[in-house]
View 1 (tube, one colour):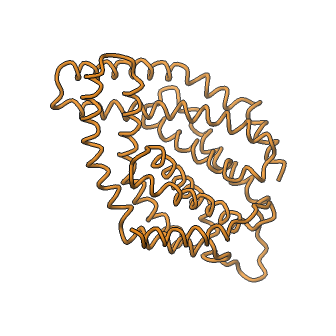
View 2 (cartoon, rainbow, N blue to C red):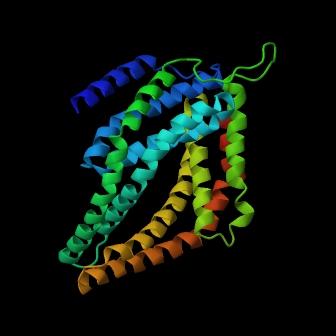
View 3 (cartoon, helix red, strand yellow):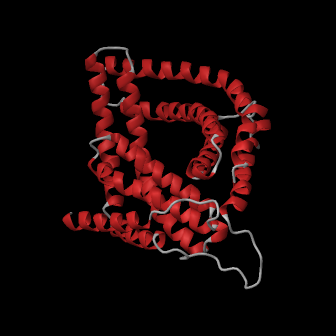
Length: 319
């Protein structure tokens, strides 16, 4: 373990030395490398807490940093060699997959604790059942975080992030192509926005799967904007706030769908009153879900309004 701590201190020192100011004149490859470096430092800062499980927020923040990193790498695919993107993405994906079920349990636990219904005994029984299942899921997460492949990824990915020019696609000599972030970023933002807006005509009868897919596209747009917000105009803060409202709306719908699927798994072995407690929580979730679906059209209309789109256009003009 001490060796692992030494390695992480060494990696953090190398990453800290490699931190650079993001500039609109940067080649897109190096602008991307700078923001990926910042996110990777976030991964390292929450890794130990994710291992211990003492604070569920550590795992949440670890997942956010990994998800943002994967989203940005997906954005940068045209400028980096395919095998480089695939190799690093695969390592991050393995931890994301192992951590997802644990995070779902953490969200459900928070919801149960916040529920002001029933007595302490019913809540305690439910939490104990949840924690037993969570412990088994954490075993898979710990296996991923303590694996030799994860350790190797930490070293390889650090090498990549502190080595300007590493892994990039070389252009043919004499060929003129856009390279600077200020020339490329508006197109990338527009592409991600288009993928969000494409759902508009298909939302009237959207099921949970389609709304979840829209949520993913909203996340990718938000990650792009928040990652490169230092290069954009001040209007981007207001636009991101509106985007976050939409994302949170969809995110809560997804949390409810996940919780509805998990609750029946907690019931075997519980007494009648504890099961009634969980059924009551499920009814509350159903009511909340119905309200969210009812108010979603208005939220979508606000986000896609001309006024909101104007905020993004003005922020991009800063480039």
